[in-house]
Image 1 (cartoon, one colour):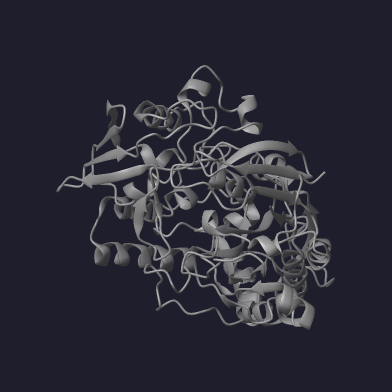
Image 2 (cartoon, rainbow, N blue to C red):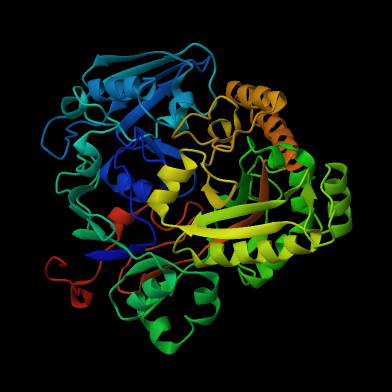
Length: 504
């Protein structure tokens, strides 16, 4: 058995609704897509045995692997793929992923093992979109997928089967003996919810966890002792994502781009990378990390400039009328609450630094830390916030339509800040219609530039991924896609095995 830790519990264990990373961790083990990325970032088959793309790029024909079965023993067929597609485009389903399927003309089950997808127009991220987990028609066709009990008792085709879920405590999975590739070598997977990274680290050191993400402090200063070096292997590689401050753009204070640019000028991102991340990351200039082919190298990190920030704020009407050190406008102080999620010590520290760095320019920041599920569903989904400190894990394709297109602002969708720029909308649409890599690069580099100019987010940093795994687990390798891509091949030699029964 492997025991891993997370600061947040999952919310909905259905691929088409799993919009948070905790849910995604579990969904990725319980369900399969038609395709996936391999360790070299190449598209390869998952449920698909093979696939072909027509010369015009408008038709994808997928041949499924033989003898795929759902965890309840029912055969998985092309009808399940068609059903999944129909739920993804159903306007009553609260999925943030629907835009990836809007250009499809039809999805047909040619026979039980063959699916034909026909597009009305070219869609460059088409293959990546079919990495979405396929869901079972026979269990969900008569259910409201937004509320079905299936959300807490999922049945998939993946390498692990669901066993139990104790809210805010643990999720347990067991190896699927009939998995289409092969039975995973690790028999059980226990996902423990520990909403504090310091407590989680103590659980690791005492042998009650096998795998967790280290904080920069833990990586740099707390894992160099001889016991840890013998018992664990730690890894470091750049993440494919970024951490940011996102603004509620319905708020008149943040609707003015001069205020957002002033905050960008006042926040010293390099100081955050050096002081909080201990250098284990890089300053972000926009949504793409340097290792993305869409990254715009012409956009340089913003150097802190408090004088320029004050000029922008004064131009926007924010001045210190009463001499108390805080800016105000029409009798209203420039004060806002910056929210972030409980248990993430790095984000809490970053919030405190932002609070300190905005004080000299007269902006009063309050910090509020909220439990993850409450934060997500009661504040993010309902847009009940001034500003949030969060992060995005990005897909390898640079398509950002779901995050920044003005149409993606409904409850449960990703543009929860309400960003709208017609030029960015047009470019996001064009980027999905062009297959040529060089043309797409030009489009996304321009999106990078415009987002840096608009500052709907204050782009803070790209953190390094810092996983640590108990040394008894073998076949763990760091690759461009991370360490978990081959989890079904991890194993523990018999002499090193520890767990003999289910955890309580």
